[in-house]
Length: 148
Image (cartoon, rainbow, N blue to C red; front, side, top):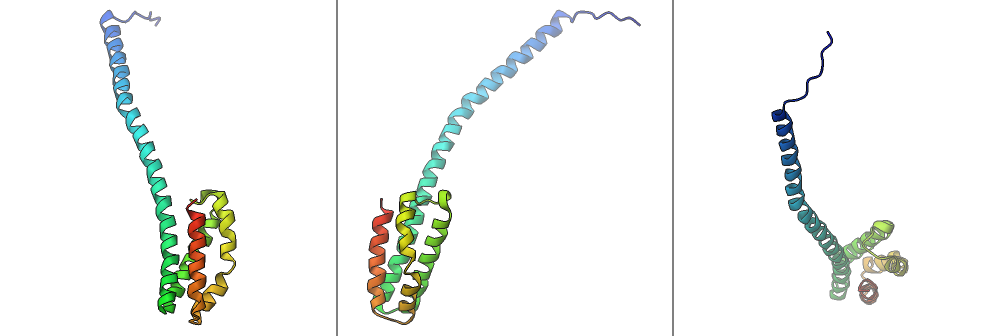
């Protein structure tokens, strides 16, 4: 049972070569279509991330501005809820660390903003008119920090 290996017929070798060429061409065509779309997806992903960061900052500012306006109008319960939401979202964002949409400088500058949290919420809870001024001052300082 000594079988000698016979060379492949020329026709079979040619068809294998053709199949390999078609496979390479198909791969090249795929990559020609895939690479530009991949680059576009990366650009869109970056733009989306930047838009989400901007939206998050705007939401936080809006929440604090709502608290200040409600307190100024004498609507202390909605003002308290908005102030509490602002402090909660700010604390959560600061706690994210490197995953935060805030820069390290912003995080460092916003840390002291959290200090008067309990005092401000207590003022608003007691329907103290001074809470409107405190919330307005807080809004102005946070806006200045976040715009950088």
